[in-house]
Amino acid sequence: MTGSPSSLVAGVTRSSKAALTEATEHKGTITRDDIESKLRELRGEVADVGNASKTYALAAGVAALTLLVGGAYLLGRRKGKKRATIVEIRRV
Picture (cartoon, one colour):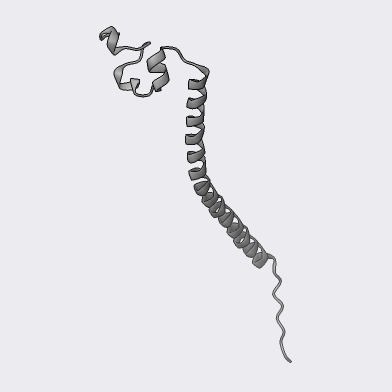
């Protein structure tokens, strides 16, 4: 790795150094509180993405169900026309 020792913190470059929490920058060790706070932060991000995805998944499910029911209706209607008997009534 290149760079002076001050530009590297445990193999982390300056560009990704911003991702470190203040507690780890000052102490140099990772505590349980650091891990818990990072996990809470990640859990919040995952929840936001999950809530946003629910809307799209619901819309896709409704569209798929509509296509499925419509397709079954059209295929059943066609099959019914093929099997239907036509009766002619003639007056004499």
